Amino acid sequence: MQPKAPKPKETGTFPFISTEEFHRRGAEWRAKFKRWPKAKQRAHLIKIGALTPEGEIPVYPMDHVPLGPRN
Image 1: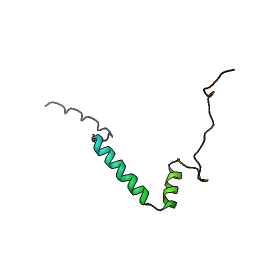
Image 2: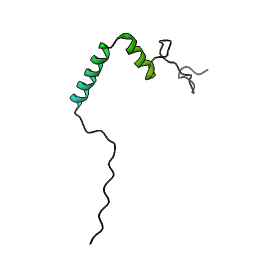
Image 3: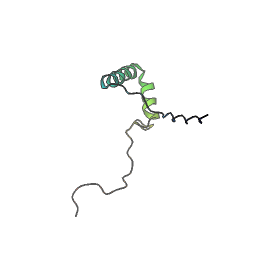
Image 4: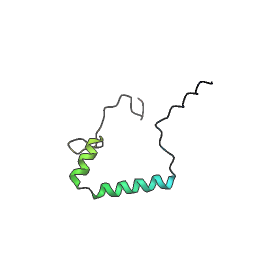
């Protein structure tokens, strides 16, 4: 009797969707987001890090020399 071949590991990849489906889903989500109350929109943007609690776009310190004229 032959030993059973090991099962291939299942990866956590997303199934392929078409470009049209990708854009349709994005448009649906944006339409849903726009229907939310402004307070809920703001809370979500703060949660994902797109806004600070003060309602501003976060600015992180640079860890490099900015591009520009070098003197």
